[in-house]
Image (cartoon, rainbow, N blue to C red; front, side):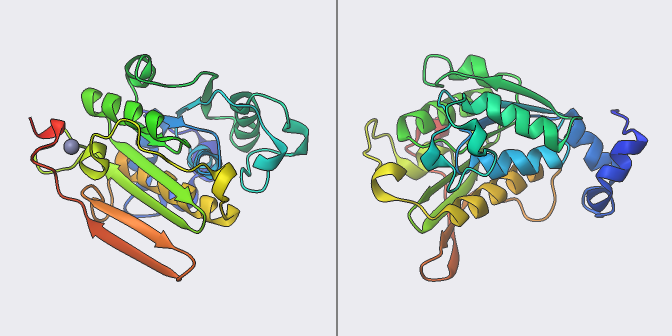
Length: 250
Ligand SMILES: [Zn+2]
C-alpha cells in the first residue's frame, strides 16, 4: 500500500476528509497512472485538477505547439508559452502546481498505429482531443486493453462527456455511441468557435470522472452520456445502451 507523507496528508486534506475518498482513496490516486490525450481546452483544466488531486503519474500526449489563439481557453498556458510544445509547457505548469506528481510529456500524434503501445499500463484514459480519427483510435485501444475511457468533447456552447468500459457485458464502448463511420466529419473549434469557460467545465468534469474511475464513489456513470447545453442552461443525461451489433458485443 502506498504511503502518504505528512506534506501530502496536509495537501490533500480536503479530499481525505471526504468519506468517499479517505486516506485509502488518496493512496490509490497516488498509485494511479492516467493518460490524457490532448493538452487543449479540455486537457488543460483536466490536467490541472488531476495534478492538484495528487494522481501519481500523468502522461500527456499532444503533438501541437501553443498558439496565441489557444490562450482564450487553455488555462495551463500563458503568454510566454506561445510557440512551445504543449506537452512541455503543460509539464512545467503541472510541476509548479504539484511537484509530487510525475508528469510524462509525450510529443506525438496518437493514432491507430501507436495507441495500444502508448496507453498500455494506464489505469484510466482521458480523451479531450480535437478530432474524430484520434478519438476512434484511442477508444479502440482502450477497449482492447480494458482501460476505462473518459471521453469529453465540446463545440460552441455544448459539451458532452461519457465513461466507457465496453468490455463489460452490459456497458457500451465509444463506438456504441458513434457507430463505425471511419471518416465522420467534425467541425474544428477554429472553424466554428467555442466558449472558453465551457471547455473548463467539461474538462473539470472529465477530471472528476477520471478520479471516480480510480476511487469509485457515487453512481457509476458508465452507460450514460451527459450533455451540457449552456445556451439553454440545461444538463441532460441520456441512457447509452450497449449496441448488440457493435464489435464490443462480440
Ligand atoms: Zn460497442
